[in-house]
Structures are given as structure tokens and as C-alpha cells.
Amino acid sequence: MDLPDEGALPAAPAWNPLAAELLGSGSVLLELWDRVLPEEQRAMLTESLGAGDERAARRVAAFLAGVSRLGEANPARMDSFGLGDHPSPALADARERWRTEAGRAGLPLPSAGDRPYRARPEHLTAAVLPRLTGCDCPEFTDGERCFDRAHQGLFDVALALNTVRGERLHRDEVAKAHRAALGAGWGAVRASLVGAVAEHVGLRTERLAGLTGAAEPDGLAGFHRLVARCNRLAAGGPAPDFARPSDPGERLRERARRRAGEAVGRLIQGAR
Image (tube, rainbow, N blue to C red):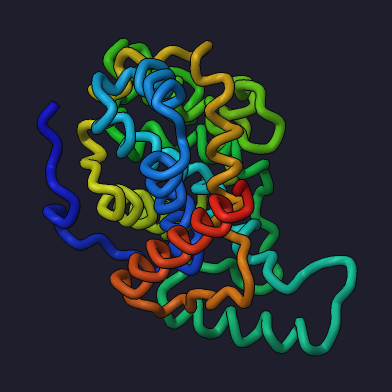
């Protein structure tokens, strides 16, 4: 299958502070695929994703790992930094500094006093991902349904990205979560994140519908475990050099590749 070479895609904005984590998960999947996953598992994933061949499946899987936490990009979730059951002056100061820098970078955080709708991030990911990866059907409004069979794979893979509980998400819950996606500017934020991950792994999002057209929902039942592993490895490690909201895209990509290589290297060393 003819896919573009890595690096041949146009640059995509990646200023969002969540971008570093999404790029990290995608990078870890690529490292695991190349250095850890046995041939049998790669073949099974290739068949389950419906990607046609292993080269394509590798990029599709890395893209999905990267965007699995896309639902974190919503007003309520992103504005929760520094809030919790154990507030402190230091945390309050960190929150204020983060909000200031994120605002300068363009993140449309809610105004003080706003109470944005809350939903589980995995439901929100499933609600918005098909629209951002090729489903432009007019009847598609909330991620619950689409009548174009050519887009079915987009929904199958989006519903399989539940790294919390593991089961396929219920479409009714996905539809209700769609309200949490609303908010001025947040559609552009998520489109930016999807574009950044796609560029990073060398995948054109307009091809995802074709690459997942033969996806097997039953075969994807265990995919969430691999994705969750990528998220954990991307977030772990000693003394992480956290990305800043205003970091340029190339700095985020280089950081993601380096940290993924280190994380998978530690995993391999620990297994010996």
C-alpha cells in the first residue's frame, strides 16, 4: 500500500500542552512495534485494524494511540489543572502561571466562573474523532451514528479506544458526551492535535477511513491494553522534562521520540 514517507507531510500546529502527551503515546507505539511486539501480535493487529498490510497498520496503530486521549481537550478537563482535594499556595501559583502561558499560546480556557459540561474523556474522544478523520456526513451530529458504510471503520476504531475500562463504549453515552466537546475554539484545538499526531506518525487522516474500512470490532477488543500501555510509558520515567504550552511543534516531536525510545529501552532492559 502506497503511504507517504515520514517527514513528507506539511507541518501541523502542535502548540497545545496536551500535544506532548499525545505525541509521546504515538511515539511509544512505534517503538513497541519495532522493538517489542512479536510478529504474531503485529499480524493480529494488522488484521483487526483492517489496514491491509503491516506498514500501514503500524502507522494507523500509532495514530490511534496518539489520539486516544483526545477527549482530554475539552474546557472542563483542561481547566482542572491545579484543582483538587488538596489545594496549596504553591499549586495555586502554578495554576495561575500555567493559565497565563496557556492563554498566550492560544488555548481557549473557560472564563472564571464558567461551568463547562463534563464527560469522560474516552466518550468524548469517540464522539469527535470520526468527524476529524473523514466522516463529513450531514446526519453525523454527535458521534452516535453514521449511515455511510465507508465510514464504519472510523467509528469502530474510535469506540475501541477505551483505555479505562476496556469494553467498547456504548453509543448512547458517546452521544451524550458530545456536549462536552462544545465551546468556542475547542474544535480547532482538537483538529490541531489530530493533525500534529498524524504528521508525527506519517499518516494522512483523509486515508484513515480507507485504511480501517475492514476493521474487525471483535478483534479490537484487546487493542485498548496496548494503547493504555503506550500512555503509561509515555508519561513515566525519571525527571520528565515537561513540555510548555508555547513549545514549537518540532521541539515537542523531538522530545516525544527521545522519551519514547528511553521508555521502551528501560522496558526491554527490565525484561532481561
